[in-house]
Length: 136
Image 1 (cartoon, rainbow, N blue to C red):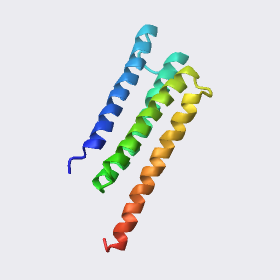
Image 2 (image 1 turned 180 degrees about the horizontal axis):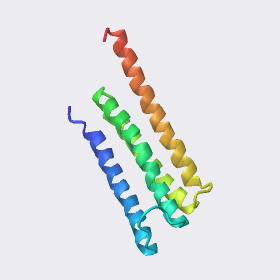
Image 3 (image 1 turned 180 degrees about the vertical axis):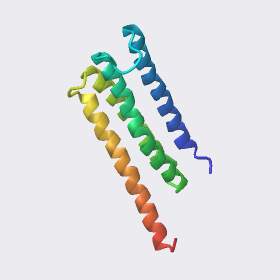
Image 4 (image 1 turned 90 degrees about the vertical axis):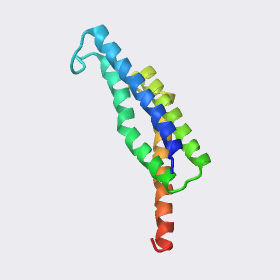
């Protein structure tokens, strides 16, 4: 089993994590803030955008990996992966442009992220239930 599809989306997620971390470093350097946010709203916001991705990525990638290992067709894995990446881009853009307030991108980014998590969890639970029916 190669788990290539999850590998693709894990790699794209990794690149997005580094891009968002670079934004944090860039703001830190420009404002000469070594630790914490120094009360700087731009740095607090850049940190929050980065951390939100870090908070959600592990569960999505674990659920995707389990679904792929369980035999979920590649088409569906790519659907989940694409929605995941689009959601995270929307969230990062929306949280940044909305400066922590409401923004279309933030709203849809969160909603789509939750949809991916819930859907993958249900797919995996269904697969588990089917295995129980077959005498797992």
